[in-house]
Image (cartoon, rainbow, N blue to C red; front, side):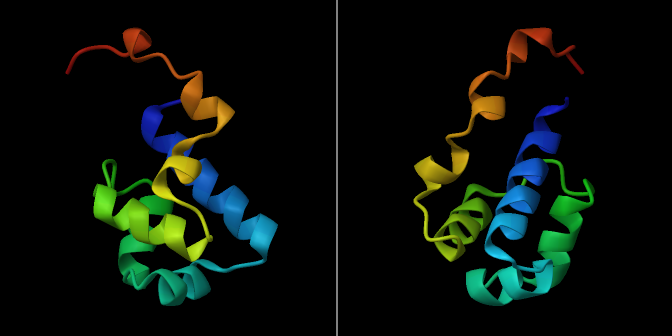
Length: 83
């Protein structure tokens, strides 16, 4: 799985867990819906940390809690090819 897919998966799983649509998450996080749509569709490969922080707060989490999940913690950058 690519690195950018990990936070897409995280956002989608948290939305499902809390019963939130991307539209509702946009409202709660004060992040434009188009920005969140671009992230979860994989168009935006590297969202700003400020954006992820706002998303984390919308889920009632710190940024550290948002980024602390097994798939990300187990990710190896050594497996990536240089571009």
